[in-house]
Length: 421
Ligand code: 5AD
Ligand code: SF4
Image (cartoon, rainbow, N blue to C red; front, side, top):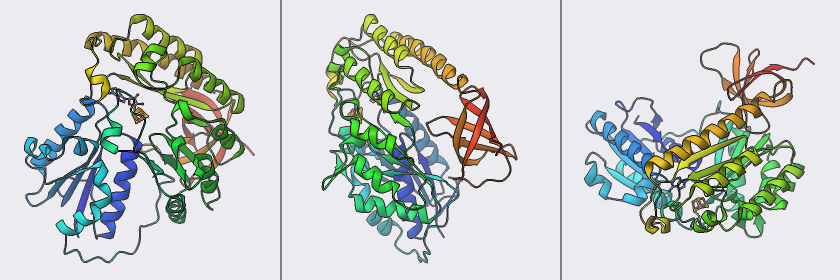
């Protein structure tokens, strides 16, 4: 029986791809291993979105190259594999296969050709104790934000047919999955024979056994009122909208090719707040884009102070060869970028803490995600928005939804007690 070891870098889409490939490998007779030194196949799923992500992946691939069994295979897949292609093999000679993000569909053939003699006795994927799984619904991106490598490595937008998505989710529900997160670089572009993203959400909500639906990411330029109304009307849909703003100054947003102004973004936020008053809104922000001035950075800070995101992913701009921004002059120094990033993180962290602290005494509806490793009666959970929680109670299966009181908060965690009936 061959063993496979997975290492996944990057976004949730990569996690979904790794899970998908894992399932295909299981049908080819593989078992999963948590020890790369014993595995027959090591798969490293990579990210290209920032230079740092590529450096980390390369370091790790080098380590696997040194510790793997002599006859074991080392495969590098995903976005960095797409971007660097066969040159990765020259850089790290222990790499056996490079399979780019746009060729993952063909991975079954690669598996059969490299491991032809598996005696497959596949009885189906086992029941899972994971309550929550990811499902990609639209691949690629057509937006070409000028800083971003994704459209080049993942290719043009392509919606997965709704029938396939629903079938996948039915199977997951059959294995015990209770929550799905629908994934795409821009889920609002979803379109399959007249079925748009809100229609897809309704179809997913009709799948028996699915209790909660999440999704990410929405592009602000096409986050529609129809979508927000659908979330408001559909009790299975979590109250969380991830809406990357990237910057708060119009000149920078225009140079980024985001196709909205800061005022458009504020309008979207007002629309969401009026239809979904309790929703968690989260964002991505990029600082130090070429030519960003102090005053423009201040506009980003002002927007962050005003919107009060529950949480934000914040990044220093990283040049990606081949993108339009890579040829823009007047770059912001490394030092200044990182000073701005630190300042932004400080402002946002204080807001996040205030939002969490303000939850004390509130009632929440939690879904249990699993046992907290170190403590016997302590369970990890997520509220109806995006907040993490811990709750002490007797044995509860992952996927259970329960009412709880927030007794206090600890950093970015709600400490809860089960509501007395
Ligand atoms: N440099 C830094 N951050 C980037 N992102 C995308 N491209 C870059 C880049 N070149 C960030 C954006 C995006 C998130 C997934 O990663 O904020 O929303
Ligand atoms: Fe990149 Fe922009 Fe597409 Fe997001 S929408 S993946 S930031 S190009």
